[in-house]
Length: 79
Image (cartoon, rainbow, N blue to C red; front, side, top):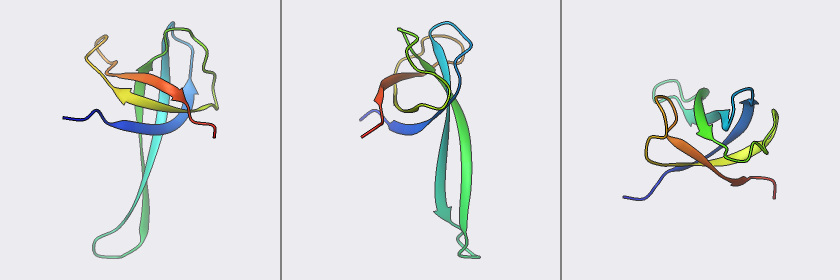
């Protein structure tokens, strides 16, 4: 099964080797046909502490690293 890759914005980098990434998805409401925005926060492993608040990053699913971390940062999504 392929690993999911999501793109989002870093909202917190206060923890050591961990960042919080806000991922927003848009979809059309099935009945009202209005575009709806939903967002979710993921905690991702950042081994080098190089990403700061406001950066756009791609995160990839991985094996559990801690109680809340199941994602790792793949790359900076600028470009």
